[in-house]
Length: 127
Image (cartoon, rainbow, N blue to C red):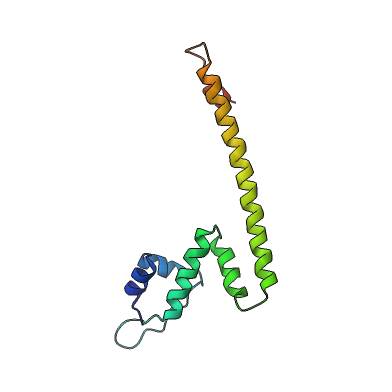
C-alpha cells in the first residue's frame, strides 16, 4: 500500500500528476479513512506506470482513457487505436522531413547569398 507521495515517488511522477490523473478519471482516488491517509494499491501503481508508458509512445490522455477502457476487451479495437496513432505519427514525420528540407535549402541559400542586407531566411518568413 502507498500513500500518494509514495505512489508518486515509485512512479517517478509528482503528487500533482497523481491528482491530475484522478481528476481526469484515469485513476480512482481511494476512500479516505476517518483517520490517516488514503492508501493506494499496487494496481494504482501499475495504472500510473501504464499511463506514463502510453504517454511516452505518444498517446494523449484521451487516447489512454480509451486504451484503459479497452484493456479487458478485444485486441482488434486496441490495434485500430494504435494504427490511428501510427498514421498521425507518420503524418508528423512527413511534415518534419518537409520542414527539414526547407531549412536545409534556406541555410544553403544563406551561405551562397552575396548580399549582407537581404537574408533569404528572413525573406522567406515575411508575408
